[in-house]
Length: 390
Image (cartoon, rainbow, N blue to C red; front, side, top):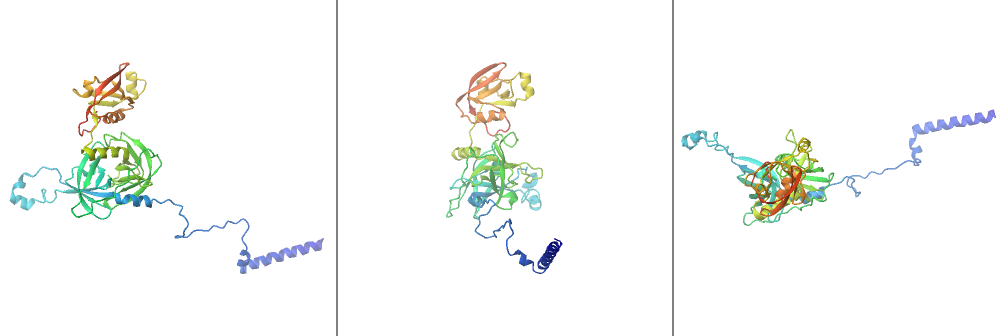
């Protein structure tokens, strides 16, 4: 037995010595066969025919870029003329300092071509007070543009590109999308001319829908996105991942002037309605009855003995207005317009604005403890005004 143990021990010792020598001097001899259970991973090199794992939006960007333009405006500051500017000697020596040569300032923004014959949709604040407007196209052309009409209450405007004689007048319009399929979390692209550096594309998601009460416009129903929007992007396109227009980039929340990931765009549903009215009529017509509304807070609801905070408290009625003729009084709670419930003053504003001037509409009110219904003949909303008068 002892003899067998010695033979076994010597065999193991010799085998270990041989393994050590081979692993030291010829390690490749030990790697000829694949190890059991090992996983072999093949990496595709750049330029191979294997599909890329990362998503690309180059097709959408290529589709949209020819439809987004840069807008350059020039305006003369509205400042009083110096009383001595009529003196030729004074103007000769001090003309530049007192306004001649420094009277004009320039601004820039973006716009979206919405028709093949040169209509451009942009923000009102981009072309507000402009004396001259120039549009730079993606193909390098720079053409003059005129204002077809504007709507300050939604911050939208429509331009028409003027084509010189002898030049091609067709343009590449963007494809208008639909808001019905847009959801929070959808990928969106923002295209414009940020800080004047040139046409740029940024990507993000829809952060929220139906943002209101931001104090930006009278009529608000914004798309919120984290796609980078910076000064110069105003009036540019917000598209879905397929390159369809779903919004007009309008504003950002920022403390530094740059993007902080909170941007706002006017939805295509609003932009399309306003654009069509401006192209057809040169302006936007909205309903108006002449009341001032106030939000119903829990404290107001408790003091009035109301069951909830839905509705709009009528704080004032303009004398001689449609509301005055229809019997509305300060202190009434507006519950419904044309059978549609009023949740708050913003909803009330939108419901009344959507009515056609001249038609009569049923208004449902709470007066004291009673429910009252009355007919009001809708008037035409004055232009501008700003604020929450309706």
